[in-house]
Image (cartoon, rainbow, N blue to C red; front, side):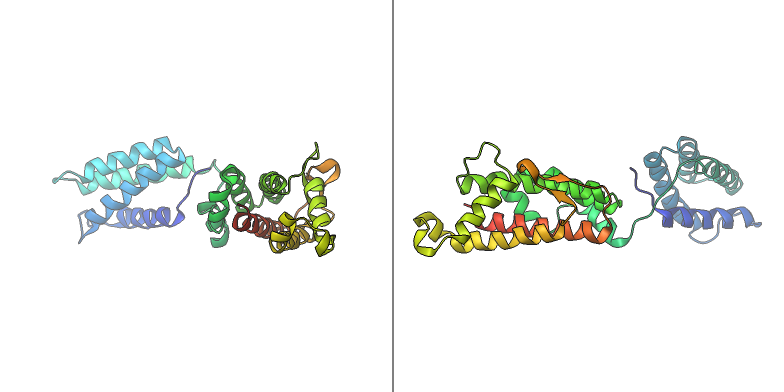
Length: 255
């Protein structure tokens, strides 16, 4: 995926039209300086977008504008050339837009997850992919990666609870958590009593996860599995937030 800056191309188009319709055939005001700045940017964007022919024309314009005896007529000829090349080259690719919120998800995928990443560095790739997939409306993929993030936390929580189940995962860890919470105070071990407040809060975030993914995610055989690929943005975002709450509580409470 490549970044497309439509405002830059619109500015260039406006300049091209002004250049082509300027019948005086000479530089006016700061037009040359402005043109040099714009076509420098256009050249870089053409490189990013793979518009090779347009890039070649932009480069010729930049070189021409760098000369003190730059001919306005020659400049106009090159503007006509790049205009035609850009129309031809941009008729093939498809450009999609994202909202400002979605752009922030893509540009700052770690935002709000910094403490979690610091505590669970193995989760960083899935955190970034979950946010980027959400930005591009790939909601099932976003949920899939959020589940992978949760699995990282489950491993550490299982170690903390000393889960010995050979199929340690969601079912085993959640079961161990429930077992501790449901015990009477006097029946809890010293470890369980010392960490009860933390474990109770973690159980609350687990319930939040269950509510967010109801009928969407299965935890049969201890593993978290997607039951459907049909996720709307509201459900996907709710699961992302619930996943973050769960992981954040672990990051703050686990040793």
